[in-house]
Length: 273
Image 1 (cartoon, one colour):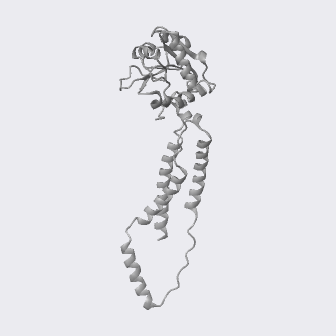
Image 2 (cartoon, rainbow, N blue to C red; image 1 turned 135 degrees about the horizontal axis):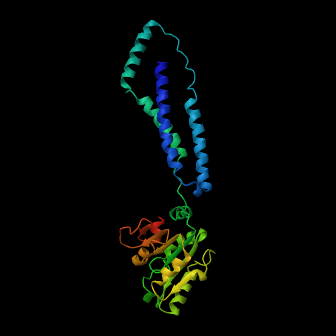
Image 3 (cartoon, one colour; image 1 turned 90 degrees about the vertical axis):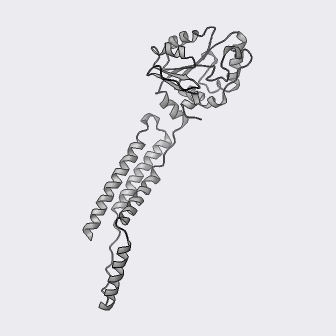
């Protein structure tokens, strides 16, 4: 009987070890650079989980008192009852119960820690430090220079991502315009949206040109780690010179190069919507 209990304990420890290994691999798949106080707390909880569970498994269940032998008359009836109860308990139920208990203990300490938007932005941009981005169709609701002659509207859904990018990236915004009034409308819309108040973006980093290919010249001169654009021709021409590009397109398209990614919107690329 004792030998059987030892074997069950060994099997439990092996199963627990395998389960713990999977949890460890999931926990440490997060980049070390992206750890913040919450992630460090998760690591601390992981250490506590190991100690707690180890003590739980090694703690003896306590010496069992041996029941005094009863009279022969009651022994036979007790034996019959024990045999009947044993026949009702399926084999492996005790082992499964112990497995579940150990798994629940670990799960309590391995609740998934949702990364912050800042962590996601840094991870998605591969720690890139300079980003160039066109305005129309990405930051602004408008999609053509002609529309900018009437109005300029910052997309509210992109603001949070845009501000996170400015926190650690040197961001340049650029667009083709038809007149000076369009430039004034764009700068005013960005200012009203609070883009310039975060300290990461200034008006001097909002660039304007009179031709579509002017953006190519801007990007080539700035040599960013990432360029974000909606024009497939510009993305194609810059693929040889820029480390990474993000092509914003409402329809799913095939990747034109291995360093070109695509998404329906900037905020969807970072999973903020």
